[in-house]
Image 1 (tube, rainbow, N blue to C red):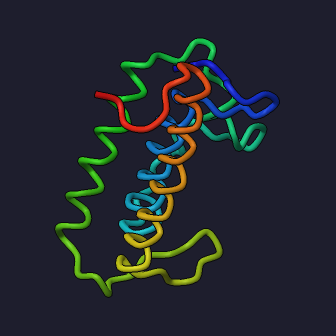
Image 2 (image 1 turned 90 degrees about the horizontal axis):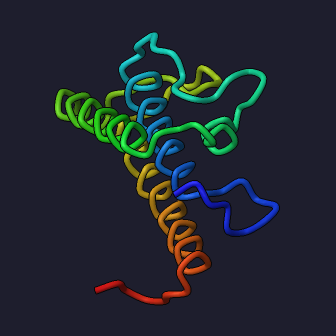
Length: 129
């Protein structure tokens, strides 16, 4: 999960799980629900710490964090209508509808990355049995 299979990129499967946990938190809790919760991994010094700071990161912890953020996101979505808004980083309003479409794009892009990383690591192509 920690292997960076496409040097010099810092992408790894573990980094992708951590990144998506942070993305779930950002869009649903911080942007939409306006919760004042800290970022999970990113810092001012290292905005890509979700990918860069994985040497001591736990795989089970990363998946548990991602699952917890997904559960919280689902509860936030369930309590709102598609046209309800939150705020982007810029302060501009953003609708739940837009966030959901963006999340489809985000997961699609990163699932593609994960597939390429897995193929580079184990040599398998296509669907695994």
